[in-house]
Amino acid sequence: MNNHEQNILEIKAIMQSFADAWNVYDAMQLAELFTEDADFINVAGQWWKGRTELVQGHANAFSNHLKNTQMHFPDTTVKFLKPDLAICHSTWEMSGLTRPDGTSLPTKYGVLSAIAQQDGQWQLVAVHNTETLSRNG
Image (tube, rainbow, N blue to C red):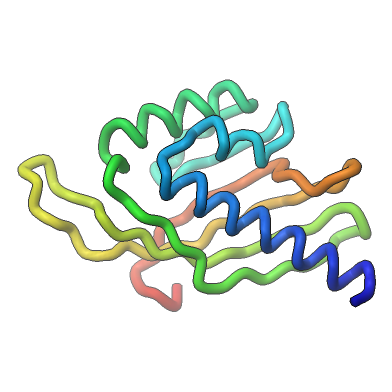
């Protein structure tokens, strides 16, 4: 395996780690995938700046409307802008959402676009999360 292929695997592993942290509702574990000064625009359009806001925002969501959700990334593509900078697009599926009365909502779909930067290791620098109307965007 060459360096390019290894970098793709490492970036895809970050996205799997993102889903893993989400699925155990661990906002700190999720935030550790990001640089200290990272930006995250969530699916509702809120812009969290820096790791502290990422932790606070996700912790709040995990204790409220996302507390029973499960995140899965069925497909991830990686495109290198420079050898140490890449953009990653991951389609996602989220199940487990409920209405305030407790009834289940259907699975939601979206795409998460992430910029990853390598500085000794790959980390997320910026993420924009968008809900889509269907599984295929």
